Image (cartoon, rainbow, N blue to C red):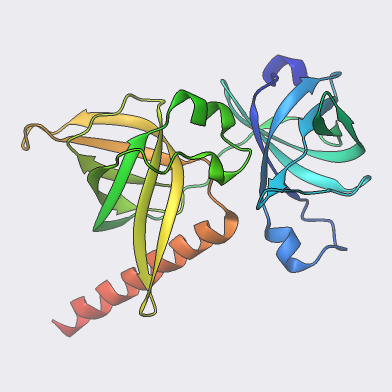
Length: 241
């Protein structure tokens, strides 16, 4: 089953399975990103040991995790158990065994909020794409960014307008700020462009739809809370008119 959909090099996300009850709440929420190194059999695969803040995350053996495989055919999910941990060819490896069938992951729909948020973005370089999923410091911070405006936002992605045009399926680095409770927080997220449209009523500008591909669960929840807060404010203003 694995070899039909999953290939070495595929990006993966892994988090504690919901039914595991001996990890703390913070650990349950963590989503680690890594990469498939090899498909050993139809129910076993090797993955690069994930890292957090430049340190290896030693996921315990015999613990079950929920795994998401980002393949050319879409996102697939399964439960998998850590069978072994070892080092080979200067790489720290986890041997994982599927504990449920592999299934296509259907992304849930998120409520979209119309807005006008400034955003800076740029296309990821090839070497950044190759390192994607290892750690966030792989980004080259000195590369120039282009100004865009987010016109709607959700917990799953954004729609934005700008003069720069990106090809569908391309990966972009996005940076924008959200204000919550009088405090401003910067979000730096990698997104995949889904749809590009030339704006007929605004020559030289393009509209893009993109979804997040490396967002932390906590950040996604913050964005969703921001959207609900803004929606409540909008409804209150409408009632006060």
